[in-house]
Each structure stands twice: as structure tokens, then as C-alpha cells.
Length: 475
Image 1 (cartoon, rainbow, N blue to C red):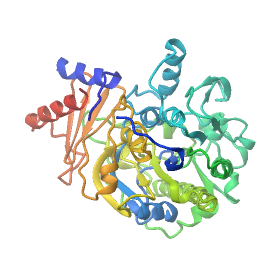
Image 2: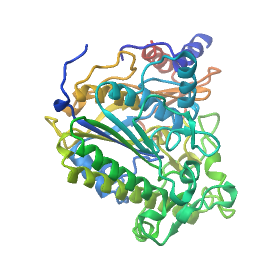
Image 3: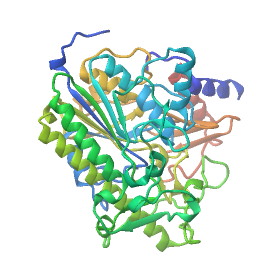
Image 4: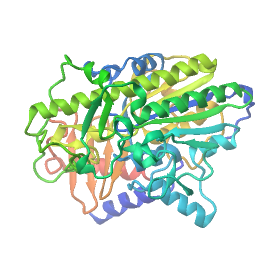
């Protein structure tokens, strides 16, 4: 990667290691951008090989565009992952990453522009609907609706979050059917399915507003638009209309791979986010039927989200803007469904860091293929600039994926990710996890053991080689 600049993650990596051209354009030439963000979506989609999942609309988009089978987020939590997407920079591993950036802007009055701000300054109308930054609607305060506390200053012409009967954005974020909001998580069921149409859950309201915004933006064809739409499901609690749950009545769910807690010290996480909900005293690691029910409800949420995405894409087609709109479908991180005895995210294992990425450019020379090129969320910002033929941001720490989109066999690059206390490097064959006290994990993905056997002590030469690659990636 080029244009590296020191930052939080670079400082962490180095401390651990040593302790142990503008282009002219006219508005008529500019493509629109539709960015679709899906919360907690692991690559459980039929197009990604999950045959038991019903995801026809995302699958159709994947067949038209380029499906990235080895896309990795830069942090296994919503806030820091969305930070890298929206800024093109590595950052803090905390969920308040974008709010910290906003405080810096208020204090210093100057910082690198975010991706929507960058497109805004290059003639785009920028609109956000739903959960695009960490807080749906992009505001802070007790209920995430304080208009004086903006998560992403200067970014959006409009940043919208319909709440309807869920009272406020915080209520909608963890909302269940018919306006139920999370007051005490232990009193809220971890999953639910209720009879009704799509509007009985918050994503239905997000879809309605997104469709209306899309129509208005397409009518104003004098300016290109950058529309970001963020769907909440399949985020906890797992709730979707019952018809989506019923779709999986006869589904054959695959066996959970490596379901046991790893021995010794690892990047394991105890699923606190999952455990805070009402689970009726059941443990999915000990109760196979309960584990099945969780997986079925998660699958129902995926199909529900897929149906909302279909409505947005159909509105785009009806608007007449489809042939000039680049579409990006992005999952903000993965999610464990029993792998390593984890039900949640927040680890540096494969299940937390690998997520779906699909990019469709109607002008592409080649399309309709999947690629094994390894890429990062960090790459989305420079890629969209390159595709839109606008100035590439020199500060961005990712790389453009335009070559991958134009040539099926293009090689990718190693992927860096981090959480509090540790950093990881994923190569095509290995994963290195380096803790801040020097403890090291090394996993060989060329074997069936994958991330169940730490081979760091047996292969110190590999560890050292990957440490040097990690260091080089951050310089």
C-alpha cells in the first residue's frame, strides 16, 4: 500500500514489534454511487457458498457484479469498521471512533475529509439513510437523536433515520416487532418472529425512506448522487417477520465447524453481547436444538434484509438511474454462529473479520465473476474515487480495486485488522495475531486445522516473516 501515514494502529504494531493525480470531469460523466451497508452480516449467502440461505436478490447482484470471496474488515466491531469504510483510514478499535473524530474536527477545525464529504466536494449530493455510521441517523446523546452531536460533520446533505413507533434511533437499533425497544436487555428475547409485513420491524421503515430518497435523487439528474443505505438486521436481537422464519422450516443447516472453545490463550471472546439477552436459561454450546433455532432466526434476518435490498434496487431500476449507478454491497463484519464456541463478533478469528463485498459497475469491461483477491474494507473509498474518475485522496490508506474489477485473476493483498489489545495480519495462507504484550498466535489456513491450532511456537521463522510483513504494511 502507498500513502501510509502514522496512526493509532501503526503505533500499536510498531510498539509491539520493537518491545518483543487530479482528473478533469463533468457532472454528466459522473456515475451515481449506491452504498448498501448490512449490519453483522457474515458471508452466509448462497452466492458465497451458503446453500441453505435464501438470498436471491443479493445473489442476483453478485452475478451481475464482482463478488469478493476474501474481503476482510479492519476491525470486528460496528464502529471501527464503519470508521475505516467512511474515512479510508485505520483508526481506534472503539465503537465511538467516528465521534472521537468529530471531537477532533471541533477542536482543530481541520482533518482529512470523510468519503461522503470527499464526494460532496466533487459535486455529489450525499444522503445517508439508516445505519451507515455507528449510530443510525448519525447523532449522539442518550437516545442518539441530539442534533447538536453529529457523528460525521460536513459529510451528508441529509442523514436520515426513521424511527416510527420505536421512539428514537437507539430504540430502532435494537428494536423488535411493533415498536418494542430494548430497555433491559435481559428482558428482551434474543430472537423473535412475528406475523406481519416488512414494516413491523425497523428495517421496513428504513427501506421506505431509502426508496423515496432514491426517487428524488434520480429526478435531480443535474448532479450525481452518493446514497448510503444501512440496514440493521441481522444485528441482535434476531427479529424478522414470521414468513421469513417459515422459509427455513425444512432447511438443512450445515454442521458448525470447529465448535469447541480453543485451548490456551487466543483471541476468543465470551459472547457478552449475545448473552445479555433473554435466552430462557439455555446455552447453544450445550443445547443443539437451541443452537439450531438461533441459526434459523439469523438466517431469517438475512432473508428479510435481502428483501429490503430488493426494494431499493427495484426503485433504482424504475428511476432510470440504474445504468449509471455503481452499487456496493458491504457487510460491516462477520459473526460467529457457534464456531470456537462463540456467538457474536469481537474476535480476530476468520468468522469475525470476513464479510460480504460485492461491487457492481454497469460500465465495467468484465463482470459477473467472483474473485479470490484478498482485499480490505479500507479499499472501498479509493476504489469508488477511481471508478467515479474523481481525484484520489492522497491520505487514504487503502488501494483501488479497479484492476480487480476489470480482470478476474488480479492478485489482492494482505489484510490488517485490530481490536483492543491485539492486531492481526491475514495472508492467503496464514493468520498472525500479535497481542500487545507480545503473545503470538499463528494459524495455517492451508491445513484442515485452520484457526484451531496455534503453531507459533513450532514455526518461529514464519512468525518473524509475518511480523516483518505486518511492519511493512504499516510503514
